Amino acid sequence: MNLRWLLGNFTDPQYHIPRREQFQLSNIAHARYLSHAAFWWRTALILLPVIVSLRLIKPTLAWLGYAGQTGPYLVVLGAIMLLCWPWSAWMYRSLYVRPVRRAMREAGYDLCLGCGYELRGLDGSITRCPECGEERSG
Image (spheres, rainbow, N blue to C red):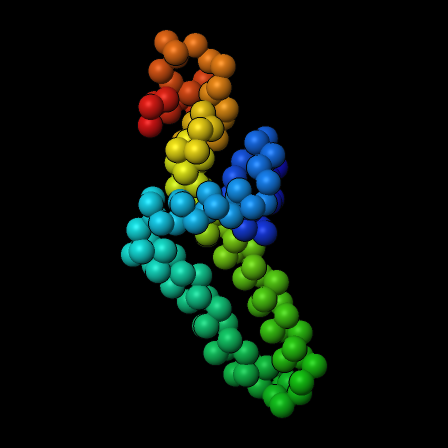
């Protein structure tokens, strides 16, 4: 299971791409293959639950009888942060994974855009990815 996307690494782990090149590929993906509208909509979807959660902390703590106490407030704030980090990382991964694969393909990596399977060394007559079945030229 690839959990590297939790730290912003959207490339597939079997390629062992240095961090500097990963950063360059992400920049190419963002500039060429990702629409600004998609990026901002995804960002809004990430921030919406965070903002709603933050707005509900004080009324919820007051309802539970912890109004004005710093300890419970910090615990709830920490829980929101811990829950929102994987949520935002997963949302950005679902946004960036295909554009990053397109940038990798442009950089010379022969891989499937759908699943990231390495197609290097396969016969040219194979038109579909053997892993997921997506069109090879994709």
